[in-house]
Image 1: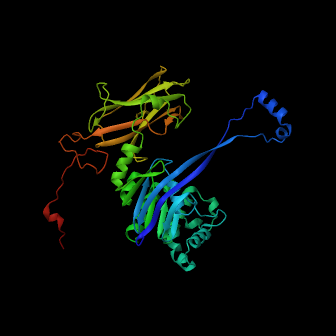
Image 2: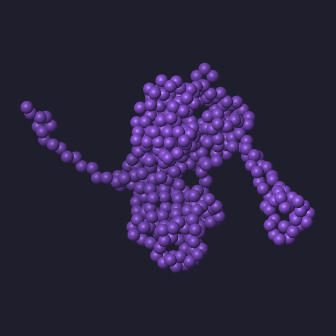
Image 3: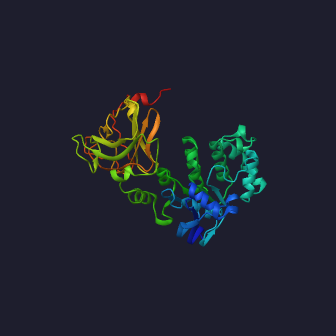
Length: 434
């Protein structure tokens, strides 16, 4: 382990999940319980059958991180990403396996990590520094930089319990980034901050990794951030390392193989991970060409129709339905959103079943596989939102620009048309005369 910052060998973490048997509360069961065990019944301590189930959050994880590496960790919710970071941060212990960490670890796993709510921002900076093993003089040397980065100088002497979640994150990240730990562990908490602060954090992490040579483990659903920041990416699936490769290959494998391969009409109708009142439910999705024929693979630049089947489950007010869909190139990497209300259209389904249709002219997407999400709003209230998406859109390169050129593949997923001109000034005007 001469040059390793972290070494994990056969690491596993098991939790025991308790399930309580359904209690019988009918009158007959209450009377029977009272007659059989009157004392226990009077004390309100009726026996409840509890069963326990083993849940393995991590299984046989082997991982070695070199000093100065920036490692991205991706995977679906529940894949074990946060559990792994908690073990590396010594917040929880593994059930089996060995873990060796060389150097001080600063963790940013949730809003307000390591903060005492009754202490001020100033006091929490010194508290966090002490926890990291920093000398008081070292904390003082970095104090002004921390406050400036967090942008909370007006509130530095205010108890952090009065901070907003964004202020919490800004201060927590500033402390972790400026108190010079050898290893920095960052979970998805940066999603709490605004776009400008997220960009600032990513820039700071890049500086830490490339200029200062410190080690970073970064969990995120932002595939663009993973690809731009990390030198290697680990894909976790059901508690196991499925792939350790370059960010581009790991992300492509994740999108193609780990995310649901297809959402059909049958299982979309039964999808449980959805929110909304349920007055209208989406039951299916597919793509057609303008002649009404289903399209298995769209072509860049072609006109396509997105079709979302629905079923009306309750009475709805007329002309109050707003339907929207989104296109993403990766988990939470949103490319565009399009609602019917954007063009001033509110729909009025008159039949119990039917389909919402949206024609997109000259599909502006490069070759790839995209995730399609959809949402229905009735009279400004959410009616149905399948959280896992409604399906996929496969796209192949076409003659989007009308010149035979496909552009630079892999540079960006979105294609934009433009007209170029050249404006030249006379040569003599380029050099000033004195």
